[in-house]
Length: 231
Ligand code: DC
Image (cartoon, rainbow, N blue to C red):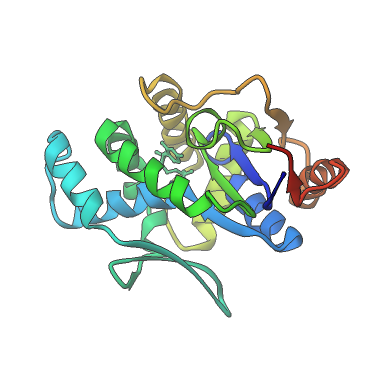
């Protein structure tokens, strides 16, 4: 017997609601949240700023190693820092979303970020959202969920989010970007997005955020003892 809190893996495509849901589940259960997409985005942002050759695996891995990525909470919520600088807003820009697929294709960058994620989550008491959490980062996670929604619904959500931030992009463009990212995420040779057989699939198209959070939290509470795991 070992006493530790569980690892919760939350995978799914862009715009499926993972990060919003993961933050709320973390708050409700009093556990940590690790936004693995933010890590790929942070490396992407610095690659764009430093004009790094994204075709060079060596340069990309060097850059990823130089990026000290930290997650912090303050009174305004969840924040992402790279090398001490707050990049919470900038990593959500459409150009970063687009370029992030190239960075996520790099096997060297993935190996580096996956090993950081494993270290961050090894003590348990954590929910990680991403594409490869249940398949590669924590294949033995105690709980695995896969969030999905139709591409139209995901595009509508992303469009609303971007509009609220003052980012000008048409709904059609947002949908095109999301479809392109879906294809890249699913076809990547290493760390591809997939629905693993032991994950619970949740279609969020017609569910509110609260309903999704309730569903996930209820599944976790139905396990008899979440703090003690047999080994
Ligand atoms: O979830 P997101 O949109 O913030 O992810 C940003 C990018 O990182 C996206 O191109 C998918 C990629 N990603 C990944 O390949 N593996 C993860 N575990 C998380 C994100």
